[in-house]
Length: 136
Image (tube, rainbow, N blue to C red):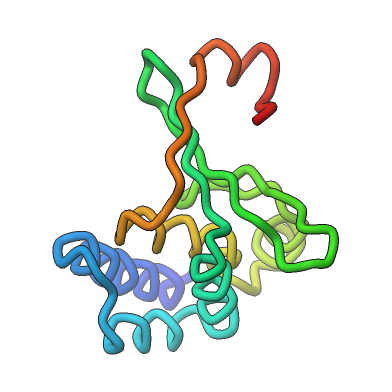
């Protein structure tokens, strides 16, 4: 990771912490995140506004992941660990392969949804995460 990317992620982490603490994202917060993440932040906000983020928590383990809707006409749903991974094409192409982005719009939507508690909560048996995949 380049120094510039590291600094951008550190700034973003500070903004996410402020949003979590306040329970809402101010225009200033969103402006900073948009400056860091560009069009992906705008698209993430749209996904969140449309109710496209669900948090699945395993019981009894408490482990969780997010299911985030795509924007295409097919309305795919992507498995997302906000700070680490998304199953979308953009994550593997723009982030992993080319290193052009810091994270995808689905990761941003999940982080924002978690920070402001604006997601649908679903509970599933923990064993179903590993054995059967997610069928919700």
